[in-house]
Image (spheres, one colour):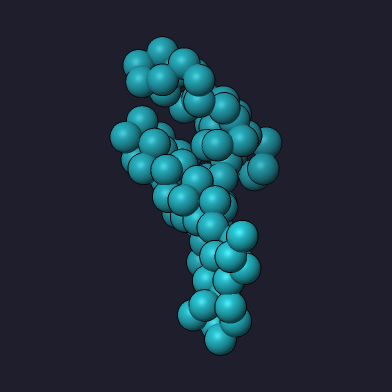
Length: 90
C-alpha cells in the first residue's frame, strides 16, 4: 500500500507544482498527510488514502506550512516567563 501512497503523492505534487506553487516539495506534502490529515489514523484502504491525497489544495498546504513555521519558530525559552522562569535581559 505504501508504494501506491507514494505514487499518489508524486502525482498530486506534480499537479500542485503546475497549478499552485512550483516550490512545493514531496516532504511538505507528506508532512501534511502524516502530521495533519492522518494524525490519528492512516486510512485502511488505498482509495481513501488517494482521496485524501488528491483533496489537498495548494491553499491548504500553504496554511499548514505557515502554522508549522510558527510552531517551530517558538522555543521553550520563549515561554519561560509563563513556566515560572525569568527571561534573561541583556
